Length: 252
Image (cartoon, rainbow, N blue to C red; front, side, top):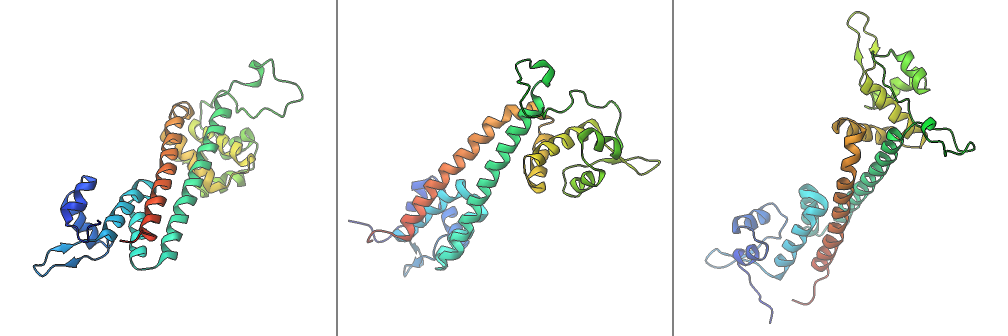
């Protein structure tokens, strides 16, 4: 026989959290308001049990902010808003996967040996996309970088506005100066641009390369990055099941 009433400690014990945390969740609207007994104690029901299970499953899948938005919308009877929040989170995961794919492709292109060291390369293959192996010893002006990469100066300025490049300025002239890292970022951007990637997408990839201090350290972290995305995708499946149980419960 199902219980008709639960104490905060009953809900807390199932998940290894404190009773105050349960009360805070109710205060924040991620749990429906509880009925109070004549003596003023909270009396939770099976609805609260399922709501807490759903919320705690949503967190590793969608994060605290989105999970709270979902549960508050559900508790208010606004299912459309809840589903929109879930849709946005799934779309973000897809963008993250695409970014990882782009980084893997770019790192592979930037770190592979030049064509001259690959004698098995057939003469009919497409033109080599590997960037020059040596970085410039001195900063390049915008014209020099444009010639090196094979784009126009206007394209480099556009990439700068998109957050892909961040050149310094000469103290005397105020002209743009591109360091060796800027050259690497420009070559990376050119490779991805030729692959059809959007500028905002490329900016994300370049930031990943910068944060890893180059392509080689980044290549070592890609497996962990993909594992985290896989874990999040699996968490989304679990969260969907828990939320579905909350939305379409058995007879209490």
